[in-house]
Picture 1 (spheres, rainbow, N blue to C red):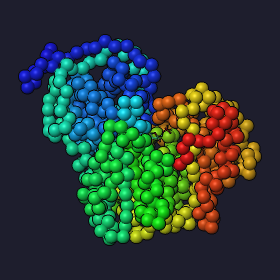
Picture 2 (picture 1 turned 45 degrees about the vertical axis):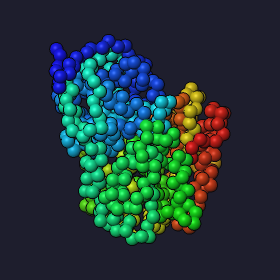
Picture 3 (picture 1 turned 135 degrees about the vertical axis):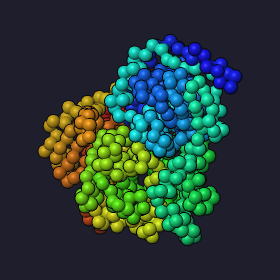
Picture 4 (picture 1 turned 120 degrees about the horizontal axis):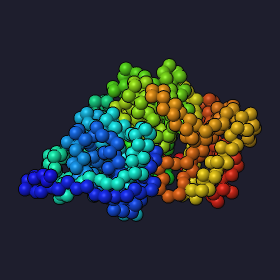
Length: 553
Ligand code: G16
């Protein structure tokens, strides 16, 4: 069979291939160095495994887009050819191949498509020597659950051939519809559907007035990543913030050589702008693909865990959530600040493994409205991904309505609920065997820990976190080591599922302080006793050769 389009002959092809090792999706899709993805057939094998296992995508509409990083355009051309050859009827593609991760989720849901393929390695650096990634999102708009990613992985291990079309590249920069094979490719504006959704949730008039007041100064750091065009359109054009409010707003393939991770270590310039005599009132940043967020006030950093708790406690002040929230969920290593809010509001609170995919069922079932993770992720039932700009707009809406500063809102929150001091220490690119050894060592210790005295703390429980999804009963084990103390303090040890070099050891530390007199202590100082317990218990220096963490947030 050959298909004629606009005089072009498009030849469906079946290409023989052999499996690659290691195509198991991690916390959020398959992430590898660009060089790995560029090997002949590497991307194709994974994409064919998606089509082979997600058979209902054929015959329907598929969303395709990415964060614009190096290799994004090439990968999209490959996916479009393969989608056409695999029977997909229509592809919705963001202009320039761009769709932020939350915008992709929004488009998947709005147009009732069969799912989407999102190209991103999120906050990991980009460029020819940087990282690339691919993941499949289901029709509900969220990352595929483990049952789906397991099936895709299994398929990659037995794959023998893939289908593609021999056809020229599609013009990704022109809005409108073109046809390749039997598939329509619709190039859509990547921003407008998402911006419309944001307008339906937040009080844009109130935020507009805040910007017009002349006394409120903010900057949003797009980190040369995908949120640049979204933030310019929403914050500057629709909300009327002064031009220049969005920093680093031009999306670049290598993020300008930076590390597009909105945290205290990688968004230093912005942090500096919220300190000193000329400090901004509000600073915010998002990551490579637009799903993470960092919130800063004048001389004040809002931990993502606190941010979730504050949004939950104040949701009734925001139009989209005026009716109240149904429940809250947080990932296991996220602080328990949100639990205290849920308890006072009388709504359910869930503790899930790390990974946004674990919120999907709870959101779909209407059991939760808001969810968040310590890894700078916050979101709600408006899409099925965490959403960086959404969180920024939520905070702006609160600042406009409450007419208080970020630090006043936080201080009031802590007075009402108590403060969960929280920090995360990351040891990056650790030798993988040493990191596994450290986790195994902890697992061996677990059964004997309950009741033991460590420093000033008495262990109440120690386990390797396992989760049974309350909606479909699926079970996920070995999701991180939790050590809970009688005082309410916790230490969690986990290996990252998103790194591409060696292993990243994450240590999450938390303690509860009800006394407002003690709420303004320095976090790292206040955490010292717990930090020491963690280092000794896990024998970090002896096992990894590291005496200090690489990143502290
Ligand atoms: C991904 C997931 C998040 C998860 C984060 C951290 O974020 O989507 O749900 O919390 O990884 O994972 P890890 O601790 O395993 O590195 P993103 O922003 O990279 O997609």
